[in-house]
Length: 424
Image 1 (tube, rainbow, N blue to C red):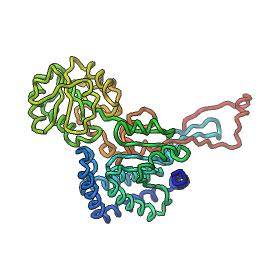
Image 2: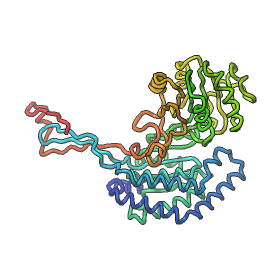
Image 3: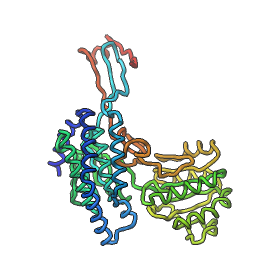
Image 4: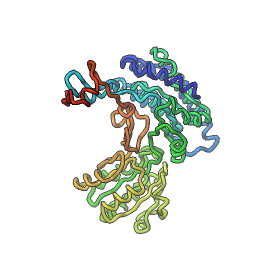
């Protein structure tokens, strides 16, 4: 593994110096190869689906595992958007004259080598590989074993596109063996960043067993709070979307919080809508009677990421209680307020400590593609470097470049010269 990582690191220096045109040509090649090999890729995915069903894999993993024509078209649309985006490398974000003839710039640059370990989502492989190529980062990719055949077929198409674009051979590497993960975690000399995408326990395992910086999120416990004044019809539509549009996604609402004044108006309608949508409800004891088949919610419920058509519902006295609940039980991922009171929305959005905070819309919008990033390598709930959906900008860091003409520090330390800072 270390020899592989060493080759990736070496080729990463060539990739980061490549032109935007070369990287875009590679992305065009990926689109062509995916379309050319579409039938084979989808057939391999069906084999993965059948294998997963044979071992009674969970419904949430099955939904993530599916890679059909719609998902193929979606990832291709994401690549097309990436091609249209400006080059993220070499942007000057600061230019300052320190003294006459001594100029400092801060310039964006790729992170280097990124190790991405992701769950059974074949579309993630395409998104991650494309983002890394566009941002000039080399990548070591390890997908879930449930998607082994699909990932292999996708990677073959992508690797061929890399070679066709005359980019270095080792800028993208795919790992398949489970043992490779442990070995990858020890490659701090060659890997600059790890992005794990999987269960809470898996992400925590990665964080606890490596010296490589880790970016990502462990949980997706997202909330929607219905305020004391709200639009009933719009709120019902939003809540159904936030829970059912893709239940196994990390940005699905897991807990609904309702202001006590809104309970009599909202919950009878919600009981009917949730029943028709097949949503299972865990409700606080003071509101459980509003639902036909609800079970009592407890502290464990509010700590649970269901990833299925199940939701917690709790009533609260005021917006302050809602904010406190979210900051206590939430995973700092995505939380929303449904309200007609602008000042309440502003109050909520400034005090909820999450990467994404919304007013009057579904939590399902937390996504790099929907943000116009082209795609994402994942969602970060941390506060350093990148936060929220991580696209091109989050895959770049920066370096300082200082342009001088025989300048030395001694002149300034001795008082012979003074700095005259001037932003250019």
